[in-house]
Image (cartoon, rainbow, N blue to C red; front, side):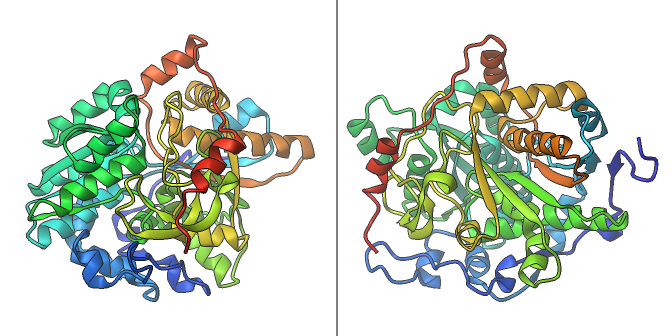
Amino acid sequence: MNDKIPYKIYLSEDEMPKNWYNVRADMKEKPAPLLNPATKEPMTREELSQVFCEELVNQELDNDTRYIEIPKEIRDFYNMYRPSPLVRAYFLEKELQTPAKIYYKFEGNNTSGSHKLNSAIAQAYYAKKQGLKGVTTETGAGQWGTALSMATGYFGLDCKVFMVKCSYEQKPFRREVMRTYGAEVIPSPSMETNIGRQINKELPNSTGSLGCAISEAVEAAVTNEGYRYVLGSVLNQVLLHQSIIGQETKIALDKYGIKPDMIIGCAGGGSNLGGLIAPFMGEKLRGENDYEIIAVEPASCPSLTRGKYVYDFCDTGCICPLAKMYTLGSKFMPSANHAGGLRYHGMSTILSELYDKGLIKAVSVEQTKVFEAAKLFARVEGILPAPESSHAIRTTIDEALKCKENNEEKTIVFGLTGTGYFDLVAYQKFNDGEMSDYIPTDEDIQKTLAMCPKV
């Protein structure tokens, strides 16, 4: 072990970022605007304010302000669990016998168990500040719903969570954490909304999708006075809040004069990856430094690697704005055998634009290989990782083994987004040899892509 680099690098309270970093300010070509699905014109502030909190709308539309101050009330809450540690994976390096130096930013050291709390507390704060009664949302594997229920419980707000049905059934303990914090949790598609009833009629055995749950949550928000909809990924505002991850990571690396060659993150809607890479991408965009950035997505829901960069609905019910993103089509339903999150049909407009310009790379991995990596990591590093995080672990291991083959001493940083203690059914299936891989066919993807609106 190199004594100059501690096993865990922490920041002091004085070193904590006091602003979120808005990467859009440094993008020469900004993400395409959200469009009104009826008029195909950019959504106005007034239109968005009918769905989202007013201050969050301001953040969503702000493409020019580089740094946005984090309110003191949010920073005080962050201090309960931040800064999160940047960990040198000495034991993984030793196991792989690689010359690569591996670091991971661990975001699972809070009660919600994931990075999602960084944005949940911000969105709940702005809802409370606006005087709202409550919020509605969706959740896939449950990390976002858990984080939001914790945040709304803290601020005394109602919280209604539409949880993808297969996750609702596979992850009862995460569901119960949400209920313990005071949230109402409904399996989606449900019979509580017009859209849910319609989807159940068309697909009576549907196991659900994030796009479906989003439709229900939005309908519930706009039909109940005093409520707004909040989202845990994809949106510009969410990537802004998650920039706290990347900023802390960069400050910690800079303290020891470490410059990463490669930054790796799992990618579903884009919140974790967008937050982790934010300040590094800013340097890349400004021409100050260069980094290889890799987005890792599941082979069962491969929006970047097999989707198209077009305008599409953000939800299955086709009531949300249109976003220009890499998408598999809003009607795409991930296979029920997919054990983790990362099941959204599209990708953040910010990350989609960066990917389209060749500023980031993307790979897709099968879940059995993901769980192989997760089990190895748990055994040597002592943390049981979430399935989502394990996509980044898989690719980190693959890249570290390439370094071993080529005798290259690269520095790799990846995001460990959370813990897997509520994902033990999936681990059980893997350990029992019952886990399988499903990769959608080209025909499957073309069928749902053909349903994208013509813009």
